[in-house]
Image 1 (cartoon, rainbow, N blue to C red):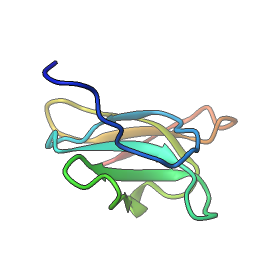
Image 2 (image 1 turned 60 degrees about the vertical axis):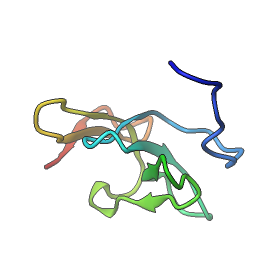
Image 3 (image 1 turned 90 degrees about the vertical axis):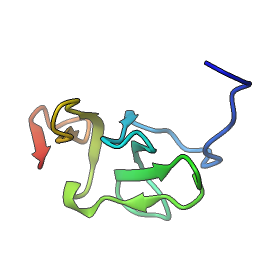
Image 4 (image 1 turned 180 degrees about the vertical axis):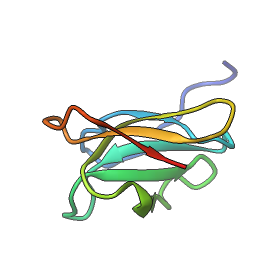
Length: 88
């Protein structure tokens, strides 16, 4: 690591998992924003206040992970659904 840590979000909300985007220029995080259901959001490192919802993950998506070779995103739905879901 180089330099001091910098704050990326000021949501004052809990994130239920986060990971690097396939390109490495953003984070993918599970959060509840603007009164919506929990979902996956792309947080660009260059402009973290410009979070973008990832609608392909649907509602209640949590704990995302990205496959290092092909960039596919795997996540679970909520805390009470024990299944896994894949976005290609």
